[in-house]
Length: 113
Image (cartoon, rainbow, N blue to C red):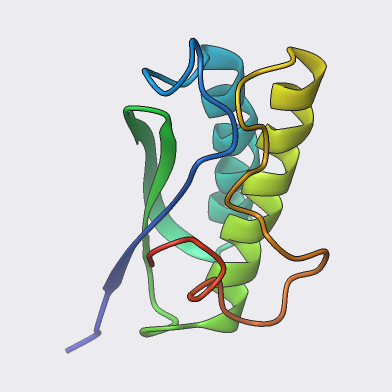
């Protein structure tokens, strides 16, 4: 039987207003990244949502727990959403992306996988 992993990775990449929600443009930017990954076969499926000002990526895949490819995908999606947040001058833009480069696993960078 094939195993499917479901990963939920979240980050605060910019709140609107304050800590209350995520602008639709940030979610759309993340969806673009995940849709490409699905078409390329990295993801089985995905859903982008938010809890307050945290952008959340729910991704099903066959890579297993703590897969570098999946965490890298999430990091890139959060970076792209942060660019949009900065353009809109949103509260705390990119505050959960605490380092300058992805190191293989988002855990420990302010994001809970």
